Structures are given as C-alpha cells and as structure tokens.
Amino acid sequence: MLTGCQSNSTELDRAREERDVLEGHLTEAVTENTVLQEKLSKAEDDVAQMTQQVDELTTTLENIQDGTLKVSESGQLIQTAFEVMHLLKEQDFEGLSTWVHDEEGVRFSPYFYVNPGTDIVMTANEVANLEQDTSIYNWGTYDGIGDQSI
Image 1 (cartoon, rainbow, N blue to C red):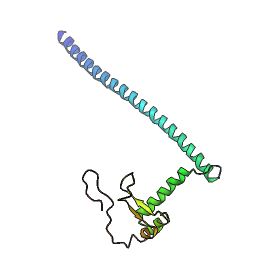
Image 2 (image 1 turned 120 degrees about the horizontal axis):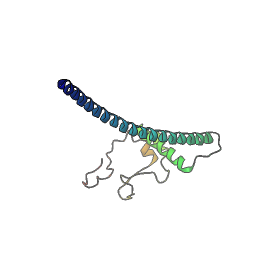
Image 3 (image 1 turned 45 degrees about the vertical axis):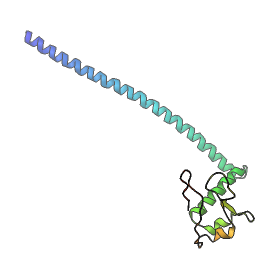
C-alpha cells in the first residue's frame, strides 16, 4: 500500500510540473497575443490614415484634372526639377539646353552656396554640345581633403 501511494505521489508531482510548464507556455502565449493585438491595432490605424491620405490625393488629382484646382508654382517647380533630372540621367544635353537661361547660362556649383569666382557657367549651346565636348572640367574641390572633383 505504501508503494502505491509513493507511485501516486510521483505521478502527482509530474503532473504538477507539467501543469507549471503548461501555465508558463500559456502566460507566454497570452503575452505574445497582447503584443500582436497591439501591433495589429497600430497597423489598422496606419492603414486608416494611409487610406485617408490616398482619398485626399485622389480628390486633389481629380480636381487638377477637371480644372477646379490649379497646380501651384511650387508644384511646377518640382515638376521642372524632375524633368531636368531626367534629362541629366538620360544625358539628353540638347533637351537640357532648353532649360538654360539665354543671358545668364547655367551655373554648376558643387555646394549649396554660389561662388562666382570658381563655379562653372555654361551657355545653352555649350550644354547642347556636352556630349562632343572633350574638355576636362574642375567642378570644385572635395571638402576636407582639397582634391579636385573632375
């Protein structure tokens, strides 16, 4: 009879250990579920916000297309900048030359400030013929080391 009690006690201890392990897994699962619910809620908020932005942009585009809203000057400037960057990327110097000022040309400055003494200024004709131009231009110097940017 004592042997049977000891056996039942061992089984009971194993069952308690297994219960403790399962409770630990359950606690981890509940915590993970909470974290995932928070992430889902944030993602749903982000989607709602993006949907609203898409709706606003769609309305703006429709208003531009039907003429009830005119593109602002800043919008035109951005559009022009993208067109010029595309011409540079495609190395379409003839097309790029159409954006060069008739009297002042185009100034290339390696920095955000303009240095009239060292910046290169080209006419529309010079830009249009850049592909055939074999000249080596010094576009400026690298900050900190002074090497030429050729």
